Amino acid sequence: MMKSLFLFSAHPAPPLLPSPSLRRLLCLRASSSSASTSSRPRPGRRSPGPARPRQPQPSSLYARPSLLTMERDRAARRADVDAFLVSLGVDPGELAGLELPVTVDVMRERVEFLRSLGLGPDDLAAYPLALGCSVRKNMVPVLDYLGKIGVRRDELPHLLRRYPQVLHASIVVDLAPVVKYLQGMDVKPGDVPRVLERYPELLGFKLEGTVSTSVAYLVGIGVARRQIGGVITRFPEVLGMRVGKIIKPFVEHLQGIGLQRLAVARMIEKKPYVLGFGLEERVKPNIEALLEFGVRKEALPSIVIQYPDVLGVELRDKLVEQQSLFESSILVSGDDFGRVVERMPQAISLGRAAVLKHVNFLTGCGFLLSQVSKMVVGCPQLLALNMDIMKMNFEYFKNEMERDLEELVEFPAFFTYGLESTIRYRHEIVAKKGFTCSLAWLLNCSDAKFDERMKYDTIGVEEMEDDNSFDRDRFEEQVQDEDDDDMEEDSDYDDTD
Image (cartoon, rainbow, N blue to C red; front, top):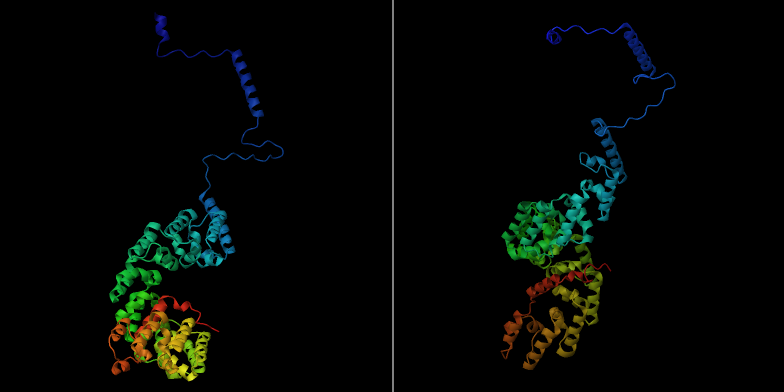
């Protein structure tokens, strides 16, 4: 019992020390272990002898380059891209601050794609920002949309050269609203792509700005609302014209020379491109030139209505050339040349070969050159008529009507009437009644007026005298119809022979 208590006492006895023999054994083992440890090379020290190359240590999976290294790599790649752009003739400075492809290969792919669209080095140099467009994110969606609305593939180069900014455009925000607006202006669906091909800058306009105000002004001066679609189709540039700087001054100047506002509106409906004639550069100088060459001021409205293109051509040189031609070949004086232009302003565009051809025909029919001169001054349309029609009319006049040539000198407009539709029919009726009348009384009236005359058995002397004048309105309508049928395409006009 007492022994157990001693074992669990709070003050146990110190442990027993090893015997002297055991201590010697332990010291021998410790010295042996120390010697073996000192014989191995330590990791932090090099053993004597030649230095061995350090083996590369595998980088850690989570190691990243420093920001400085990344910046240097980025600058090196941008320098390569800039050098590639310089080789294309593009100034990299114009693309400073713009995010470009990180490698030359990607930039080369972008350049090749633009070239496939028809854009050459000069085009890229003129608008280098196109190189900032992603092929997949920007170009392809825009080009797909343009193709879907009907823009022709062969017109893309022209469209992109005129308005390369379209490559940056948003279909929803920029392109689709313009297409919808054109359709709302009664532009036919098939004409919408033609409008954009001709005037691609329209894709960058804000519809609530210049576009809407120009249309509103045209309607305000009398252009019919249903005609707006046709005006835009034939001359879409009108949507980009400022009313106060271009359209209104043009309209007011034409009113100042005697045209009624409604007449200007009708002219714009038929030939809206006249709005593109520069007022200061072309219109005003041309009006002054007409007056200098003998045209009377009161005749200016008639000239402009008959031939609106007279406002936009380089007129002074043409007038000098034509006046010389008429004086030398037809003996038309300077004053009479003004009358020719008043009656048929298209005469300023007649080629020399056309004039001589018609003059030779008339002299071949037996007319003196002085008579031809009088006929041309009275009816300049003789110089632009179809030669076959003139021949048929003259053969009928000579063989069937049995009249003197002097009557044609007095009424040269005879050649402008249809043989079967007018001349033959009326001549036969008058011959049956036994009337003797002038060519002017026979032809210079409407069908209704002629039928009314045939109800009587005699011809009034006063009525004969009143009908000796030419029907100028009929001539103007005829010329206008010929213009609408692209009369300018005839080789008689602007012939340099």
